Image 1: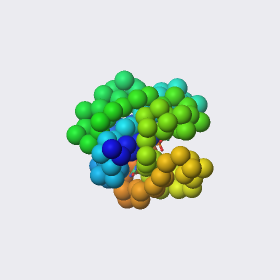
Image 2 (image 1 turned 90 degrees about the horizontal axis):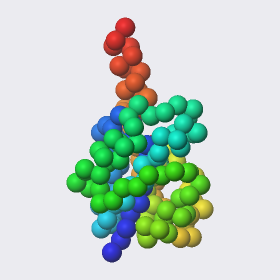
Image 3 (image 1 turned 180 degrees about the vertical axis):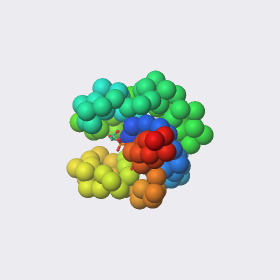
Amino acid sequence: MTNVITFGTFDLFHYGHLRILERAKILGDRLIVGVSSDELNYRKKNRYPLISEEYRCHIINSLKCVDEVFLEKSLELKRDYIRQYRANILVMGDDWKGKFDHLKCICDVIYLPRTVNISTSCLIEQIRRNSK
Ligand code: C2G
């Protein structure tokens, strides 16, 4: 049984989010997703996500490619989460390239290319522009 783990905020869930989860799932048998908590986002980006952690977890949990979801409360706990969920592979988008190489001693670390031309911040910007 190969367990794959990945992490993300998944605010304003979009096609790029879906594609990384689908690509992560086919690398193993089970896909476990750590969804960043509202507090973690506030600490990291100085703003709360537009969609609450409860709703973001619910959306991710309802996807066909996802087997288990938990709240990621700290960026520094990746090693503990990997052990707790018995993950064999950590998948991250290549915007995180190199950042988790220190975890290669406990699991495989794979960076997948991001889907081009879509992101939560671009969507927010587009909506802003269109509503003027
Ligand atoms: N992603 C992607 N293509 C996009 C946008 C995002 O492949 N066009 C991927 C990102 O690379 C990431 C995942 O989707 O792997 C979730 O993206 P974000 O919600 O932006 O996650 P982030 O805030 O970077 O994660 O421990 C990490 C944290 O949870 C933060």
